[in-house]
Amino acid sequence: MTDSTFKRFVEVGRVILLKSGPSAGKIAVIVEIIDHNRAIIDGPTTGVPRQAFPYKHLTLTPLTVKKLPRGARSGAVKKILEKEATVQKWEKSAWAVKRAAVEKRRNLNDFARFSVMLEKKRRRDSVRKALKNKA
Image 1 (tube, rainbow, N blue to C red):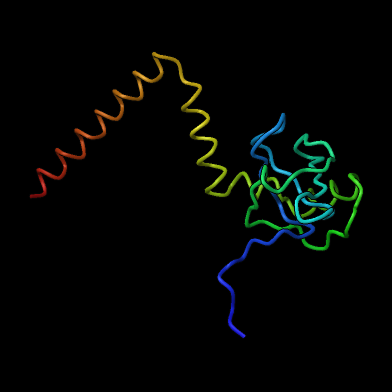
Image 2: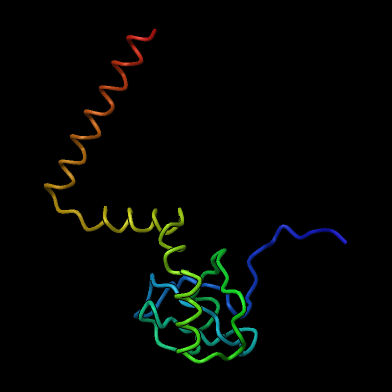
């Protein structure tokens, strides 16, 4: 039997990122699988209410919550998430850091964008000068 290169499966305990709805951009956990189109998700530590959610509106992350029983209630899910520090693992991941940076960049006003442009110019000039002195 060959090993599959696919690693992210729809499974109980899989941490997901919501793509649409009022909780878009937040993470939750798959608690129960309903059918081939939907799952019950819950995010007691991130403010996502327990609900049925279609797979096409969520993204599977590489994180999983181990030892989460099927159909666990919100209290049990919250305890396990806090014990395993899942939200902190997500926030430290490169994916979450990049999303936060993009969101921060989107919320800049004109002056902040101008300041970023000036800083990029300064950094570019210093790099060019350093490379010129080396050569």
